[in-house]
Structure formats: structure tokens, C-alpha cells
Image (cartoon, rainbow, N blue to C red; front, top):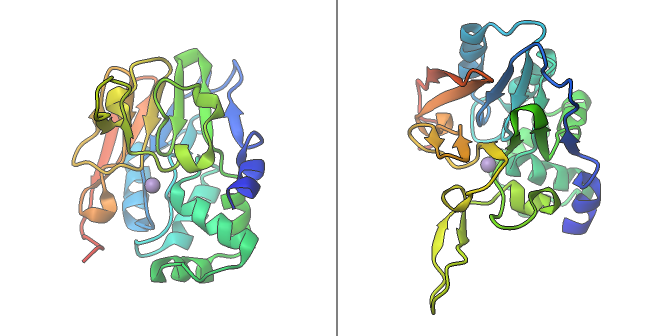
Length: 237
Ligand SMILES: [Mn+2]
């Protein structure tokens, strides 16, 4: 599986942005939506994106929440770009292998709901997006610290949470990747839900767990303006 997706997602689905990327507009980055269409609608109403703005979903648009298909449709209608999340990566694996034996119920529900345009959109999702003028990179999960970030696999950058630090000692120390990421570029990511935005000097996590009873968060760059919509319902019992 990894090899095929590796060939598919790397290097073709990386997006080094051009010098002109977002030159006159704003970049609106949106954290993990997980099918919470009403929160997404409210968030977009609050932000009121302008034509020259770029909208970028940080991945995990689908699964667990009430309407994954509607979220994908809205992303398409907004002409937004999206990073690929671990949930979309699993959907694409199904798309290639047609093996649903280890799919979860909520994944099967999503699979059944998606049409050809939705699949096209998911297949077009990018592994990461680089914004050189702002010295930022956007990715769903994160990167392994102290290794060249551009070469890291889809399975790593969509799923990374805790990693071993390279502090010496008999027992390697385990830490959250972003706490160990002390280098440029600045990384904006989702995937790891927290009650609030998780910011360090070198990174910013925007998954505020809207599916877990938290809010849905967007950050507008370059002004670093945060816009949030509180979740009304915890969909995970
Ligand atoms: Mn995720």
C-alpha cells in the first residue's frame, strides 16, 4: 500500500508555492472539519472570504461527523485547496485496493456517500503546501524533527504525533513532534486536537477538535487572525 500511495502522493502531490502565491490576498487555513458541515458553513459566513483569498483545508475534512460529502462539496464550491489527512489517505487506499475489510463503520458510511467529483477532489489533495514568501509550510500532521521535511512520507506527515527526541540516554525521550520542532520553516498543521490553538515559536496547530465538542478554527495569514465557531454538539459518544 505504502509504495503505491508513495508513488501517487510523492512527489507529485507536493505543492511548492510560486513567488506570486497569495501575493495580494490572504491565506485562510481551516483546521480538521470531520464532516461538521454546519460549523464549516458558520465559519465561512464569519470569515467572508474575498475572491483573491486562498482557502486551504488542513485535511481530515471527512469521517466521524454528520455529513462528509457536504464538506467535500463545500470545499469544491469554495475552490479551496486541501491538504490530505490520514482519513483521506485511508479513503484513497480503498479507492485503489477496494479492500474494505478493516474499514470502520463511519468510513464505510463516507465511502458510500461519495460521488465521482468528491473522489476527484480527494485525489487532488496535496501532501503539503509551501509558502516561501512567508517562510511557512502547511501539512496535516507534522514532520519528523531533524530530518529533511520535504522527503518525508505520506504515512508520516499525515499521522505524526509523538516521536522520540534525539536526546542521548538509555531511554529515548518521547515528545510531541511540534515541541521538538525547533527549526524553519514555520509549520501550520491540524490532526492533533487540543482545546485551543497550540502555538510554539516554530509551529501552530489549528485542530481544536470540533468533532470532540471543541470549536472549528481558522487562521488567516499573513495577519495571523484567528476565527472560531464553537461546536454545538459532541458527535462522539
Ligand atoms: Mn488527522
